[in-house]
Amino acid sequence: MKTLSASPRIKLFTLAGLHGYVDLIGGLLPGILPALLQHFNISLGAAAVLICCIGISSNLLQMPLATLTRNRTNPSWILVGLAACSLTTLLRFLPSATPFWLLCLLLLVVGAGIGMVHPLGLRGIAGLNGIHPMTATPFFMLGGFTGFATAPFIGAVLVARFGFAGLLWLLLPAALLAIAIPLVGLTLADGHTANRQTLPPDPRRWRFQRLFILSIFLNTGTLTTQSLLPTRLTELDFSLSYGGFCAMLFGLGSASGSMLA
Image (cartoon, rainbow, N blue to C red; front, side, top):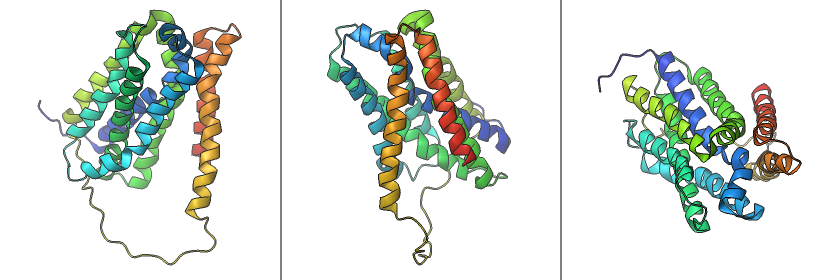
């Protein structure tokens, strides 16, 4: 495929779109959870395990996957992660008698794809010429916030309108991104970090342990609310799309708070 001499802004938009897509996949399950419960005849607790599979895999695997790919400046590994994320559409073809462990395995692989794209995408931001990382990084993060926040509504609308076959529409943005990444000539910054001078500890700063514990409680509450809200609303006889819409509003509020803070 012939590579175009794309401007840094086009590359930035491509990276933001990539971040938005993989985070959309990561936030898709809550919006379609009521349909999953019915189709695969699983309990709410089992469905929570599925959400944990994709969440834990996408977060815990980022560090080892980033280490394994740090010598690559070619974005081909992003395409691998993108392909893994697109395996979510296999839900369309799985029968209702699919073993629960197979669903868990599928979402672990999807989560691994998400975990692969995140650090590589940030290295793509660092490899941009002409745009300062202080400007490019928030724009990249905004793409992810938007994708994750709107995911429940998009997933709910697709499944409510077309059944699980509606998830196949998600292959369209994946294909466009797979074409755009090599077409715009995207390259990744070298993953090796230079030696930096160690600064003396500042007593005014919070310790990492305190921030870590605080983030556990905050993210547990946020994820639980957004994940179970559509299911609870369908139990109250609201439509699947309405439940996804409410989850989207909650996600957009969370994203707005993050950006404004």
